[in-house]
Image (tube, rainbow, N blue to C red; front, side, top):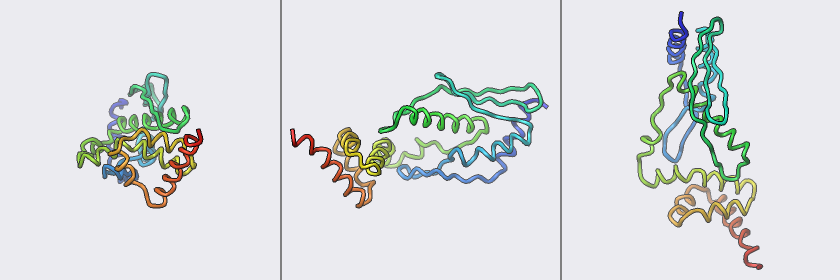
Amino acid sequence: MSIYLKLNNARADFHSKSLRKSGKNKFAGYDYFELGDFVLPAMDSLSKSGLCAFVSFNSEVATMTLREVEGEGVIEITSPFGSAQLKGAHEIQNIGAVETYQRRYLWMALMEIVEHDAIDSSEGSSDDKKKVELLPSIKAMHQAIQTEDCMLMRETWDELNEDERKLVWMEFKTKDKTIMKGLLHESTKGENNE
């Protein structure tokens, strides 16, 4: 049996399983598969067909390699290696974020996992689209609240225009808004003393 037939059998087995999407994009209002939702079921289906898959990275591409456990058949799927610039994150955290996304998309390509297009799903109001775009800023502000980092809060806040600030402000609970105000006030103390 060829590696291609084995892969098709593994995909058929995989798609007969009941999987649950645990990822939620509350801003655009859709659910999505996280890596942990499907990796173990996918590995089980591949194993039943005598296949093993693994992901590797270099500075230019991420590669999913599928091999026959007993045999010489090999299939490779590649994806250009992207980048991430999470606010307030160290370089290694950005690399880790990219690798996680690359692994997710390579596994989805290997197993032919189909999801609704996030862009299509977010074609609601322009405010909803803008909230999706502002998600990195919102995450940075949550981090600033948790770490009480007034400079991260100030830097993130200052990057937003007035309309963006209104949208972001609505995403926080009253308790968090109080902390945000305090951090923003604290960040200006040094400026006022000069």
